[in-house]
Image (cartoon, rainbow, N blue to C red; front, top):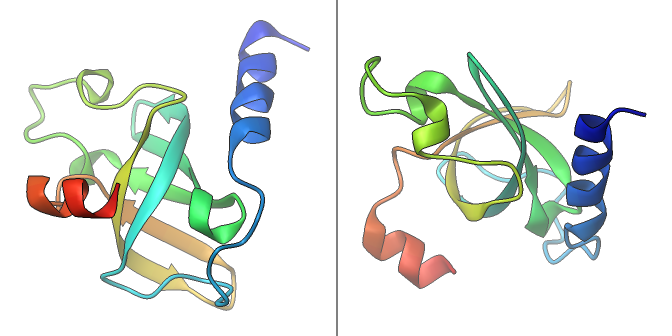
Length: 111
């Protein structure tokens, strides 16, 4: 197992495993706390703490303010932050989230 895979496994182990919500999937527009566990050129994968570590995806255009910035200027693996749910595919259990669409006062209130 590579160091990168070990780091991802460590992050996954540290995510809250107890389900706080009774729903299986979040609602569109809902604020959720997530732990970033993998960053790619096109976006970041996040584990939703309140949904038992459900995996969500944050596309790069929902993280960075402009294409001049690097996604790593905003997010890093292991970071816990607040995201807004922007898309849910209940049939395939896919969730997309946005970092950009969360205002500072919402972050403070949620955390």
